[in-house]
Amino acid sequence: MDILKKTLVQIEAADRQRMKKKENELNSLLKTPKGLGIVEDLAIKLEGMQKNYRPKKKMVLVMAADNGVECEKVSKSKRVITQYVVEAMSNSTSSINSLSKSFGADVKVVDLGIDESSDHTGKINLSGIIQKKLMPFGTNNILNEAAMSYETSVSAIEIGIEAVNEFVKEGYNLFATGEMGIGNTSTSSAILKVFSDLPLDDIVGFGSGIDKKTLEHKKEIIKRAILTKEIDKKDPIDVLSKVGGLDIAGMAGTFLGCAKNGVPVVIDGFISAVAALIAYKLCPNARDYMIGSHLSCEPGMKYIMNELNLTSPLLMNMKLGEGTGAIMMFPIIEAACRITEDVRTYPDV
Image (tube, rainbow, N blue to C red; front, top):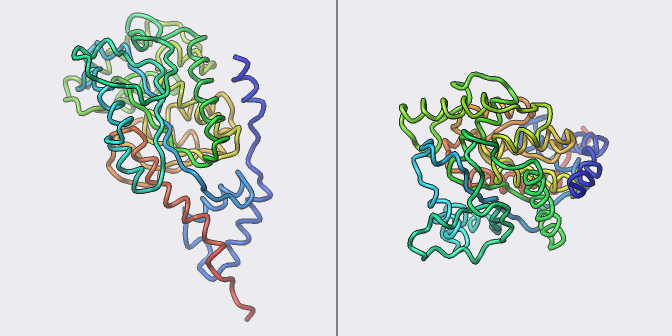
């Protein structure tokens, strides 16, 4: 708990004076005022994080863990798929690895609770990932009990914070959030339901590609999971521990760690956005370091981004996770950093 408390105190708001100065500089360039839209907004936001910010080393930081609610058949995929995808990530053969190669970024995966007992072949090799396992079989089934203890939730958040701290020391200064854990659209939907009290129809989506019958079953499981617990919706960690997941907690730590270190971090899809919401509720200043990417196909995504007052500029029809949408923002972020370097100012006429 000490790491989390110290981090929350250390997170400072972005520098509004630098942001105003950057806005004035952009307005002096030879172009239509605000002509580059979101690209200019990004340039201003990045200047608020760091003076003359430029991306140096880029990373997709993936938090991986299994979710007990998977056994309720709320997903099209079985939990062993978590291991297969993470193994592919460690071998640079997953979707996020392919995209990362295109954008010059590294991929690092943290195991917070992958259930390796689901591998009945004994052939899946997870040796290439960062081992921080807190629960050997993943979280508990939220239908029957709390996902994890309060203390475990804090530990998972702190692992995310410490991972960022270490990678920043290695020179990384641009992060994308990623996750892997079958069943995590259910846990994310449950968290958003507690925070917002929106109708489940407005929150719960098709996740891994389930059919309509399974979607209704998924909504019922989430509803029952919430109703059977006493949840303090004013305490984000209590919400996380009761109906959340280790991967979401780890990503919340990633957002807080980036904010503490003054570096930008890109939100991916719905699950990542839920983690961003938790980080924001723990420390509102953390939002100043968050950058939106794509608008996930999960229906609850737009409500989270609205509460965070952030935009999702990319309409990509993506629904994979892993950080695949977030990394698409890397070249746009890099472009935003160049505007005032390359574009001349208006002549005196």
